[in-house]
Length: 110
Length: 119
Image (tube, rainbow over all chains, first blue to last red; front, side, top):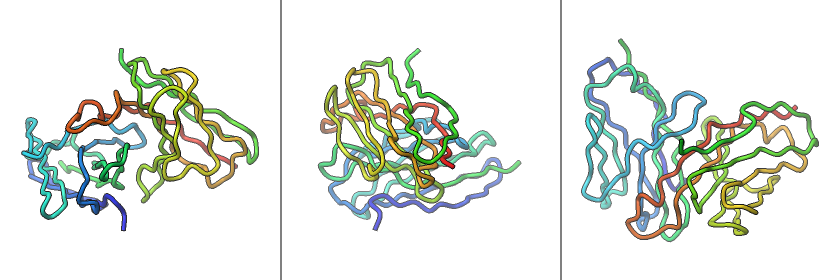
């Protein structure tokens, strides 16, 4: 089983919709979760850190559910410019580096 | 401007011809890393470095070499490239080292990528 898993999608949603992605992790001792955004064939860019208490940045909300071992990303009022691949990342246990999921592809349709 | 600079952006080569992909960061980051990205497999770590002269294998190190002689540079070397190394490569850096609840230390900054094709 992969340490970090995501539904690859694609998710096709209309403009203005609310969409949520989940990312599950296998190591219960995992710490330090992040969401990255990647446009086609370009470098991933940090979208949000995921704090234990959850955090919000404008239309984006990230949450951590340790009991069920997943993190989530909620995007409200989707814009065409939100179309991208969203990668989750976590640091398993005492590991020194992040492990990335395979990414979830989102397309926001006009 | 704070950035991670990778070169070249595109590279086409033939099997067995040694090549180097350069990576440089100007943020005084301790931690640097190389990833390859393939369809359906996501980002997989090749090698990483916690500081100068300290390098470690990631998940897929076979066929690659790295060096960290200076803090800012972390080149990726393919001594004898093979077609299965055709991929999109990313260099990344972060403040490092990992500390509890130190999200800022772990935030990765990526270079713009190198698309490598080995024929």
